[in-house]
Amino acid sequence: MKSRYLGFADRRLVLHYPAALTAMVQFLFAHVPAGQDREPDHVFLLKRHGGEWCLSKDNRKIGREKDENNMANLLMGEVIYAMIDGVHSGLTLHAAAVAWKDKGIWLPGTSGAGKTSLSAWLCTRGFSYLTDELVHCPFDGHRFEAFTRPFNFKKHGLSVLSALLPETNNIPDSDMLTGETVTMVQPGAFGPYQPTAVPELSLLLFPRFEQEAALELEPMSPAQAGLQLMGCHVNARNLPGHGFTDVVKLCRQVPACRLTYGSFQQLENSLDAFCELALDSSLTPQQFNRLAGMVSAPRPAPFSSRAFGKRKQKVLPATPRQAKKKLTIGMAVYDDYDGAYFSVQAIGLYHKEVRDDIEILVIDNHPEGKDAPALKKLECLGNYRYVPYHKATSPFVKDRIFAEAAGDFVLCMDCHVLIVPGALARLLAYCDKHPLCNDLLQGPLLNDDLRTMNTHFADSWRGGMYGVWAYDNQADDEDGEPFDIPMQGCGLFACRKKAWPGFNPDFRGFGGEEGYIHEKFRQAGGRTLCLPFLRWLHRFERPGGVPYTIDWQDRIWNYMIGFQELGLDTG
Image (cartoon, rainbow, N blue to C red; front, side, top):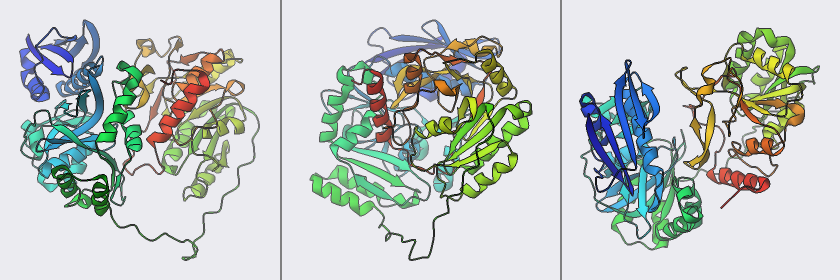
């Protein structure tokens, strides 16, 4: 066996691996310091067993993969998590970073914000790559350390980038490692790799990619930047006061902007020029704001529907209430007819045995939108009910499902969820057996590979969200007994209608449900259970973009409101 020591911030790891994986380990960690100055905090072991690659940490098995490239992705994720766990010497953030000379730019954001693609684009414009994932800034200054790994492009991210940047089409195979869900690319593929030792943080750039969006570079106040940065603070739990004071201090000293863009062509000779000028010059706050304003595209004149004789879509009437059923399957829809159509029709096609015992309830959260007439037409199914509702666009909308439901039990699901055949019949049987159940019922979430699953959220913070996907092997057996879980994603859950405790009416926007609603059930005397048979598949990818606004401030607001309501620690 060979050994590779790894160091980041105040963490030290060692990886033991067979010689056959030398090239893979070198590919993954070529730019990570050795970190042999003291005993490691964790010991990883990678070995071949039974035709699979097996990974363990501190003598505990944590994963296995048949494919070497898929194991590379798993290993990288576990190493990063181990690097974060226990860091207390400074602020550790989920952010990409590039450098211009000896000055650094952070691109903070959660998965899907576009950090990797934007940092790759900046590298094609002469900036030096530092990381697309993790940075650490000690408390005593603005010089920071980056966890330099290969670029990690999820699914089709690299092909999209290549279409926009033709010069990246000829990346040699030796610079790429492709797995089922991630393609890793060496930094040198997007320009000469020029490592910068301990650069000084000089700009915070919060990226947001939206298809067809106009280019906008908006200066942020220290308060706005601090709020956004707290959502990317991954070692908050290790620090006094969750590191809030240090985040605020940093944001008062480093200028920040929010970048919205719809294509890389918009950024040509604008964003790169702005970054160079901002880093090379000693600008006053007023000069910085003026320079940022020059990058944004001109705003079009306000649109007047009256001037064009255009009218809003007439709100269609609700379907009359139906006879009482055992189970209502409800979903809220916001301009997602395709998702709702296939979710609804899959229930009819693959769960025919429960048709007489269920009603399908759709709450149209944008009844003035273009999808409304098509959603309304699904009334032809007979056991389907359409209800327009536009008074709120928050988790509170799900309360409307319970208010409108005709069933004794309610299964609430996202409008882009599929349920495995037979699961609804088994859920009805469970409800018949427990007619006075006061528990929150959920099931394992199938991943897109239709093999692996997540049974719950572990009780911890990551990337500004409360909860980290995890798996309990009690769910291996579909016929196994229900078991308690701390929380689970709210894409699918069920309970008795009269046991539903409701969301806080002060919730706004999207996010903050997980953990909150689970604790609310427990405080009311119920349990939060995983039913191994209740397996479901959720469509996460949205290539066309999300038709509504997802705002970090709303999510943090909901966490604060929910935690205060339940008497939980908000410090």
